[in-house]
Image (cartoon, helix red, strand yellow):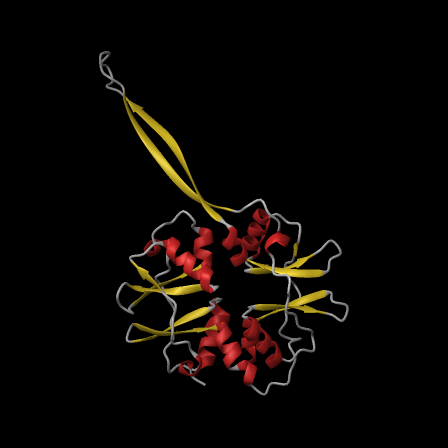
Length: 276
């Protein structure tokens, strides 16, 4: 199966010149992990921008300075196994599909999972692909702490537990970004200088105003923004069935639970790519 067989041709993209704020609004509205950036008025690919870029550099206002220019791409004639290998090795979630430097489509992890793996006659279960070492979070955790935990653990979403250690929800970085605000603060700095040896000389002062922008999260807890209707899997869930659930609900990962409902691991869509 080739990239052109499952890629999405109607691509959501940003343009430069353009603002970082506009690109972030599009990513949040469309619930994307990132998107390509093209030269305004053309389909010439210049870079990509991701949710991580906004989290790491909330002070940047120009999209051209925020985006990543060194872009890995695929062509429509590439095999989907080649795309899957890049996703696994590089940790990317989306790859621009280009032909003669022009953006003609996009292929994502969920495209391969939903349009290929979900339809394959694979009988094995997800047990050997699931991850048992996972990061979870308490539902009473303040959003500011949750944000730092996601950054430190490298996770875009975390299972949420209640005080009885039962799974009660999922919280993703997009949930935090949707309620966050960009706050500006201005600091005044004065530098003085006079004419040395001239007692009649005026002291001169240069006043510099430094404006910084940072991401501010409201005084809320994880339970206030988490998704409560959690889609799950078990050890016995087959690979195609798991892929179908991920595709249907547009989720990147499913908590794996036992017969009592206790969380025992997690299965990510990128884990399923290994079946190829």
